[in-house]
Length: 392
Image 1 (cartoon, one colour):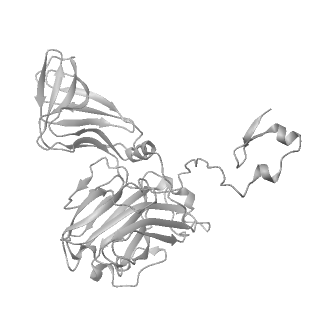
Image 2 (image 1 turned 90 degrees about the horizontal axis):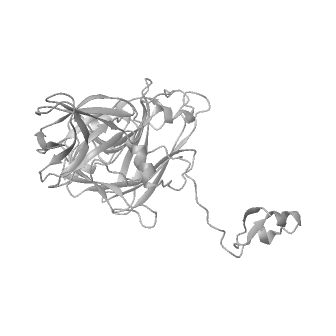
């Protein structure tokens, strides 16, 4: 007899139950017990990557003085030259009982009582991942944004969605933090845009933005633009509470989800390795330096008497040909080969593609054709890195 499944009580349901006509409502449903649990297969309904703030390839603490990516896929943007500064960390302060382990925390370290420009957090989404929205047609889909937020401040805060493909269209929505120092879930519904077509390419289709500070004389002199329209800088952040007003201020966010439809579903948790791989399309660490250790970089071979070359295969296909990031501090590199080793100061990028990159080191005294491997050497600095950047 063929196995079909189990009833809510756990008994086996087989083809014989169908053949002898013995299926009853008791076998299909038993209201006296809790239905059997099931494993939800990810549908990737969340358009945001790393919305649970779990991936932090670049590090877990940042004190940027200008534009900088922080946790994976999220960037702090300084528009203009604001005086406010933050320490941004991957934090374990999260909503209770919601399944989250990490959040992103903004701690104001230099205050600006009256904002002279703007600071904002954003993530960008590829246009080819947004085609199901049918923007630019009469069938344009609505979206729902949901996220958890916490701050010692209460008041009005601004979320902004910007469509970057030529039409430069945008829409802003406000949300309210009602209770200080309390995690609150916010849900924002956004109508589909029947006018702004999104290009089907690997460029930025959406910029998804949370304002932290906004100069109201530049970004808030008009009524907030709550419907899709041409970008108007004076209407994008009207009413924004100034997170940067005091060094006592903090702002947290996690559980960011953007999905098709007019209601918010539960946050879609992905396995850590799947989430990491999605982030590595945009940024991938080759090696990260830990304090006072020799850390492996890669195998290389002497191309001539003074240069070494090697090829690194990416763990996942990149969005475009990536650039090389060498955050080396005062470390140096050491090339180990048979019978000896030599130090050199830097690694360079020869060329890159979607799947691999060729790197080189110079200033050595070698025999052509020798093989070996490269390590970082002897420094107390942490989180220095060699990485590949293919961010939007």
